[in-house]
Each structure stands twice: as structure tokens, then as C-alpha cells.
Length: 237
Image (cartoon, rainbow, N blue to C red; front, side):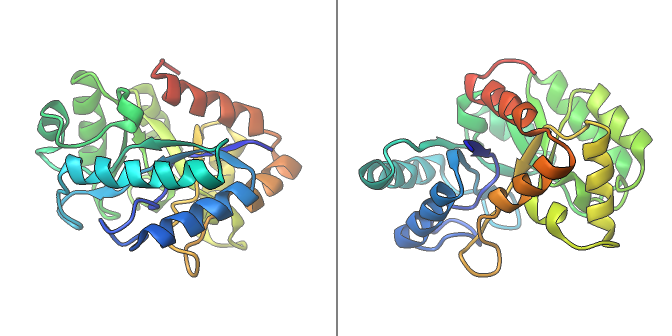
């Protein structure tokens, strides 16, 4: 099973994810064991964790690439960011300070869990108008959207793609995030599943378990691979 992890915090020393190169390699090793072949490294970017200079991100990404090529030559790594949306996000994208996904027009964007639906919808509209293709990170976290299918469809109609976290699929019922994710999956509204891994202890890579469950219940693995390939190619979904 060849999988793509579109949301990780494997890039070391820049946020609350991996802290050392060794940490990064441990997570990549675990991803490889689980059948993940394409990995996006998406460190936080925004006021919560700072605005790391892209040169630092690129230098550390190159070090990880060099190390990974020695041990896992078949793994493909891509650099991106998880952007915490603010009024200056689009400007930072235009100036090249904030990174898109693998140099494409796709951007992985997160919001505050308590942000209003209006603010999220407006952000999606503004990003699309500016020429970007927003992927909303862990859609199940936002109180104003969870369990409001009308809001979900409006966001997608406006140009947003939806990503959910693997752990949200794996939680036991009646966990509200799990119920919401299952509903989204059943209706074919999810484009991406990411591990959102941060470490090897409390938030470790877990895509294989999630896909194993999906294969039993939903049979959508090929669809997710198709969408991930579109991001890698930089082509429209």
C-alpha cells in the first residue's frame, strides 16, 4: 500500500514537532514501515509558532532529504507549511515568505478552533481570489463547521479542499470529531487524510491504521492517492 501523508511536523527544530534531525528520521522511518511513499513536511507558520525564515526551512529540508536518501531512497519528500490564517497570510504567500505545498498553488491552512464560519469562508474566498488553492487542515476541529454540512459544501463550492486527521477516524464512538469525519467520508467530501504527526510518542505517524479501517468501511484509498498526486503535480483537482 503506497500512501501519501500530506500533513506532518517532521521538519525539525521549527515548531512543536520534531526537535532534532534524529527525530525527523525516526518519523520518516515509521512512515516508511507503514507504506507511506510521499511525505509533505508542513511546519507551522503564523503567530502561534512564529514566522520562520524560508531559508531555514529549506536548509533543514535539504538535510533531511540527504539523510533520507541514504536509508529510504524510494521515499519522496516535499516541503510546505501549515499556515495559521491571518490578515497578512496572502501577502506573505505573494512575497514568498510563506510556503505553498511543494511549490504549487495549493496551501495547507488552519484556523482557530473558535473562528466563525464567516471568517473561514471569507479567508477561503480571499485565497482563491488571490490564485491559491486552499486545503483546510483538520476540518473536524472547527466548532462553527463541525456537523454543519451546508457550511462544508459552501466551502468546497468556494474552492476549498478538506483534510482530516487520521486520529480523528480512529477514535472510538461517540467522539464528535469521529462522527463528523465518518459522515464526511461517507458523502465523499474528504480529499486528504494526514497524520499530523509531531513525535513518536503522543502524536506519531498513524496513516496505515486509518487506511486499514477505511478499506474495510469506505474503499476510498485510490481516490485519496489521486488527489495527492494532483497536489504534487500542481494541477487542479
